[in-house]
Amino acid sequence: MTVKESFETMKERFNPENAAGTAAVIQYNIKGDDGGSWYFTIKDGTCSLAAGSSEKPDLTLEMSGNDWLDIVAGKTTGVKLIMFGRLKLKGDTSLAMKMRSMFST
Image (tube, rainbow, N blue to C red):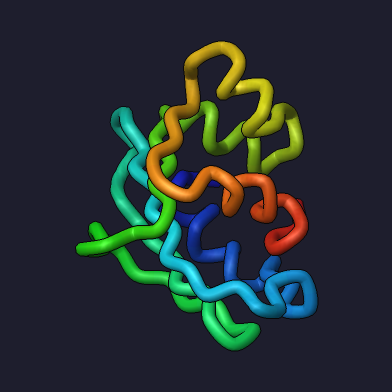
């Protein structure tokens, strides 16, 4: 699976019941050969994906493509990557804690 393909499957793994009351834009900046930028807009129990960069994301996550694919595959967690300095967060970090419940692996 490529990074792009993994983002395309995220909408299918969205759990609207776990996103109730959440209105946020979450930006992903994935580095490396297979990288790119995508952002999710979560509002009213819905989730939409767009390629590129949001003008005003509530949370931005930055990591390598390999680390992202390991998270998607359930081989590691964002918390572990933060501890090792391989995942950088900017903005409302409380949203990062909600991510695991809003998107199933």
